[in-house]
Length: 102
Image 1: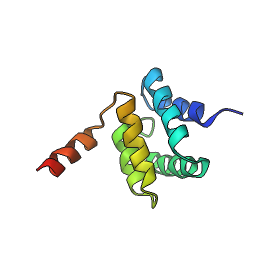
Image 2: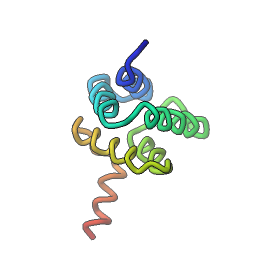
Image 3: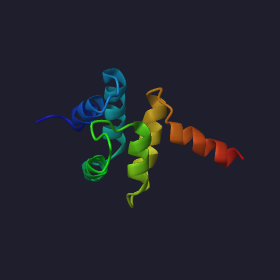
């Protein structure tokens, strides 16, 4: 049985994220989220990709967008934190900071 961090890393790598960052995010998400939360995120990401013009790609911005539509605010927070810890700044997050800072 594959660990959740490996499954996350495999998925993110298949969506185009380089392997070291995918593994970093996978490890962080496994540490910060429960298995139930990870399953929610996975189902939401799969549903999002079905409606995408390029379902083979799911960027970090897309993942944040998908996670923000879930009823659990801990999930997008964990994604944003994992992104920062792994040296990735999502475009949407920087746009949000600009709005917050005014």
